Amino acid sequence: MLTLADIEQAASRLDGVAVRTPLIENQVLNEIAGGRVLLKAECLQRTGSFKIRGAYNLLSQLTPAQAARGVVAWSSGNHAQGVASAARMLGIAAAIVMPEDAPRSKLENTRKLGGEVILYDRYTADREEIARELGKKRGAELVPSYDHVHIIAGQGTVGLEIAEECQSLGDVPEQVLICCGGGGLTSGSAIALKALLPKVQVYAVEPEHFDDTARSFRAGERQRVDANARSICDALQTSMPGEITFGINRSLGVEALLVSDDEVKEAMRFAFRELKLVVEPGGAVALAAILTRKVATTGKTTVAVLSGGNVDADLFASIQAG
Image 1: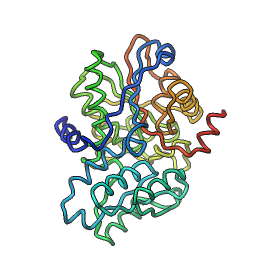
Image 2: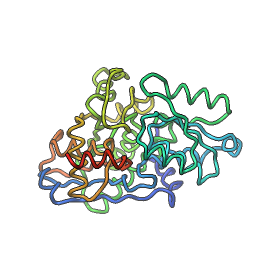
Image 3: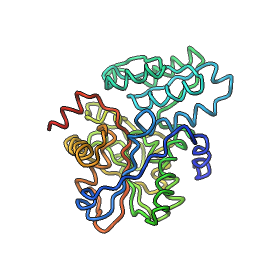
Image 4: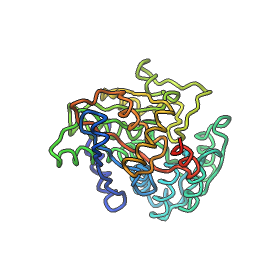
């Protein structure tokens, strides 16, 4: 099990690299919730999502020999940008296996950040297998998107900041809702949150058809989603939780919530209309869970993570148009 100390060490490495994103409060949202809601705006993070945290924490710990051989990652887009950005800062060559139908902005930004993009069909090919073969061929280090202790520790700095910022506000949240794909952000944040706020309940929020974490919690072991599952939330289309992340989340009593694509779209509209924030589909699921009262919020303080804001302009405009 990773510890709070591991996450605090990651925070030290990320000092001056990752943005300490704000907790945003909105009166309209508070009135809807019937309580206090604080939103951790990782959509304002460097590269537009929390992923720079884990990527930099891992890459900065490579030996000179490892760094010289470069790295290979696989990602639908946000981890890709985080790896490419961290690699450029550290002078490391990075190749990222990405789905050919990833949002155009994510593909373009990964390339702009210096990443070598290798495309694949997410419905017929195995991105991890492609990346592992490429890494073996090049002798490069693999940078998993969630199931690695350094990645988890880096993402856990989100939870660390939430706990510290809530303490500075003099308010202890009853619950924290976190967008969940493979579970890196949820598990890392849960470690920090439960260490500093022992009574807090952590929720992993997933798209209803990519409910691998919810299924796994019910079964007591890791489960896959249906092969035909589809969702607007491209950042959360993980078929099965990570081995490490699932173990952490289960041991810390994390619970799962599900939201529909229509609920996600409404949350994106709310974020733009009321918060003046651009939030991508996968980054809006925790807010969607609050707006649709998937958890009891009356008389409580609730924190939700807006995990990313990388969405194509055309898609965003169509969603805003309703």
